[in-house]
Length: 416
Image 1 (cartoon, rainbow, N blue to C red):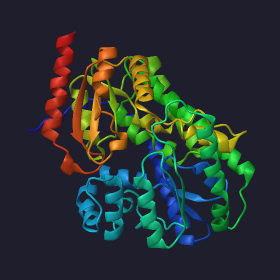
Image 2: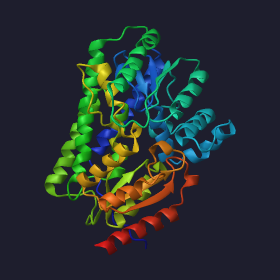
Image 3: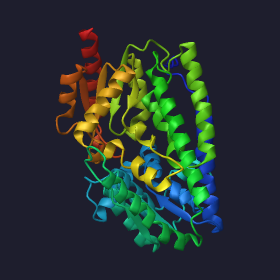
Image 4: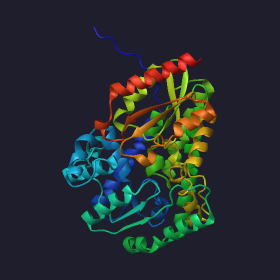
């Protein structure tokens, strides 16, 4: 008789409320799409969502849909559809998986949220290239397909010290979005609603930052893999009171775990790791269990902190948004990134670093130009690089990943 495998991870009760938040979000979008009474804007995940809320738009974030395609392991079979259309297999697999799904007429939403059989139709698409140029091409394709306007912000890249000129240029671009957004919305920007959305985004950001910071406790009350599924409201719900409310509940549970000395791992947390880069969405569960079984916990990451916007200020919405969306890790130069990771390693008390070399996401990959060795030389903290991708599982070798991670944990054991 097969014995049931003992769990190695503790689940958070509040995760159920965050899952319900996501269900309510997608059903509200579907209702708006069906009724046609509310305008829908598609927005990149680090785009000007607060401005859209100030005009009453319902907001859809295609990147969350692509992450679902990855997590449900649908993406790998859909990417070839996009490559057959002329897209390179080397570009963002969020883009290729999402376009492939649209062409095939399928979506993971239909299984996750019964009653939804397609993504909502956009009235306008709004991007910000602070993540990468791929989002501009991605949205341009849909703009042509739906025959709707596409507007966006061209962000600065490899920014060291942020200057007033950087902020003025981005603030001006955000202000220039107002007129085309008003034209499609059929109404003027409500400054009070806009400022309120900026304030709520800041509150949501602060709460999310506090949730992630609880992982500095020993043992950590959550894992990086938990955080990947818990960050949904920080992405799609910023600028709303509902996102603030669910993160208050999450933070309370995490702080209760810390007070009780209860960690996310059932067994001893022997090693604390940092994850740099994107997750492998189709292997979240596998990687979470594999690492926990080795007595290790990935307690922090670069990626999950991407929705911390400490510069947001409702009293100065355009300028503070420009600063918040320029301060992001992904837009900065290597010197800033190295200092950032070094500080995170110290704050979370990390014993090692896992760098994910994501084949189709060079903008979120920081192990290509010597950064791991430079950081190891200044911190003494060892690292391992795993090859893979965010969505395309053809780039992932489970056996190789397990071998590399197991060898890395053995290295940590031997160094003690």
